[in-house]
Image (tube, rainbow, N blue to C red; front, top):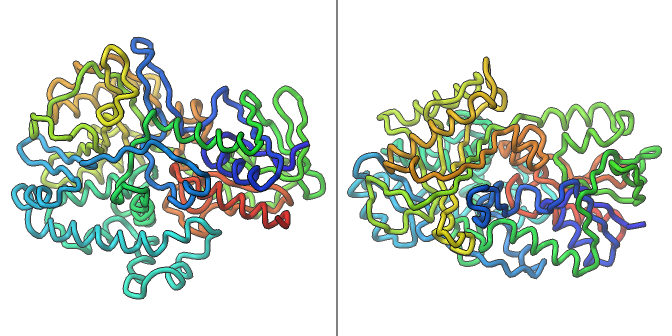
Length: 512
């Protein structure tokens, strides 16, 4: 009988398994899919290009703490994107954000304004300071936002930190004096809206903005990185560490219930009827799926109510693409590195923030927006190892806001039409893109739920509007039952800190 069962072989579960096994505990990881990695994996989903690899769920590594990489002895093939952001327009203006500060300043002054340049520098300087201050908090159990400010944040930024965590994207970004709404919209979309149900004026979008600016990876310059071989390299590497220390990882082993006797965990039951006994069960599943594994009477009603209040449906659409060739942007026809970064496709109206507000309102009302916010990736330009011998490129449209459930219609009816609509938006910026698409692999919120096993298709399990002690606690009221998933502190994304911190809580409970 193992000392510890970890339910789910996503990245956090694998981190927990590796760290507990390294401390001499016998650990068994039970994964119901036939592959490990959860939503952090590399797949080959294209029928007409079977050797073209793509990261189908998580696209980039940004938030894994370097201290955790060292603790796990992970040497990942990280590739810096330089430039890291590309903001095209349908005219001649553009911004290509990279390490060449002089060139970026020239673009700001020529296409936007000196005020926008100064605001951009001030914003990034403040976020870098906050990143340094709160970095230690990610690898320890959380305290409240206010106590975090008091204990970790430099005095001059404490008030700004609390307001950012509790407040809206608008309140934070408007402080810096940007003249261009397009630049503000870019920062809001990529940092504040990504993966959550929230718009420019939604409280808590500031927390998501902060989370997305916590990249401290070596050599990154604070920007998210591509992993050679796709995101599956991350989870395969952590699994190898876990196995090295003796952890057993079983795939095709679906847990159907967690056994509890008089408030104490006894093990789990699998779909085939097999019982696996253990005194500790750590769930890497999302909280709502995990709650269904535990008998109703084993958890206090107020605890269930508190956890269930965190549930919101996913609003993310992922359109993975097989491209025959690279697109050509009207604003920047020659190749200056604009294909590797996150490409931001935003409405071109004078009132871009108003257009985004309308798009979010459409989502809230169950409609598909004509122009949602889109992040576009073409990662094979930076990591050619995933290309096939025919030279196809992988690509993805990451659409922030779509309804989980459509009003008056269904995803089955709308998916094909809507993908064409999204590609027609790409055509506005890079004419002819639609003709370059050989095949698609589409993940609506419902398909994300089916494909990765995440309730509601919510890529972060719990909205990143919730931070620190407002997220799911590692401990449960059941003795020996713990959470290590993305719903816990510090946030949803490929971070691994929740797995690390849960392992520490378990070791402490076992007196190890």
